[in-house]
Length: 124
Image 1 (cartoon, rainbow, N blue to C red):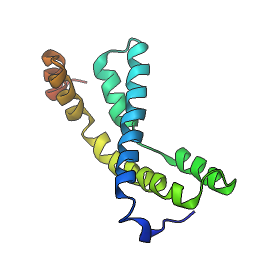
Image 2 (image 1 turned 180 degrees about the vertical axis):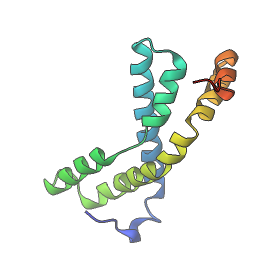
Image 3 (image 1 turned 135 degrees about the vertical axis):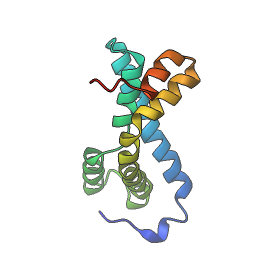
Image 4 (image 1 turned 180 degrees about the horizontal axis):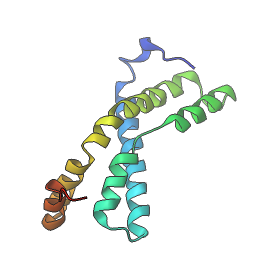
């Protein structure tokens, strides 16, 4: 499986939609599962931000689908590009997960928990 760089200018819209779908879809699934486990909204949001990106298992599944001719190479290119980009932005999301969660909580109107995340107690 290799990236076909000639297709990049033609597939940027599909790649962007898939990137948002992978990151937000998987993130929302994780938020829902953690929240349903009654671990609290801040923990659920942080888990969704940290784990919402694509991973190596998705690339392995894509390789299997290509190997068994389930997907064509043209169809798989935007998916592969979106997964790679999502893996590239993952360290940024992990590094800033506390600030991202604090902003999401502030937007949702939960200012007390947002303030706690923005200025955590240093006595951990």
